[in-house]
Image (cartoon, rainbow, N blue to C red):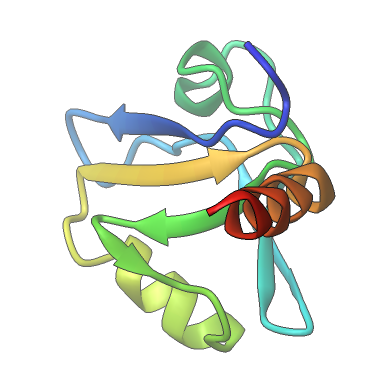
Length: 102
């Protein structure tokens, strides 16, 4: 799969006591997956370090602060669905190119 094509990833756990196995890093209101634990739920679901998160549970987190992004992730304590992209810069470039075509 191309690194600039966004992918949905759903993480499910039996209990909030079980860690999803990743951390959230935020910079300039962009949110990334970091510190993925090997063989964790996040790892086995296909998330990779430095994936950029575009949506959480169907809602954009673009231009939100770190605390709001975490809050959206905690709405359902046992399941998170995220839209992520590995190469955010190429993703944005593809949008700009497509806008010029149409």
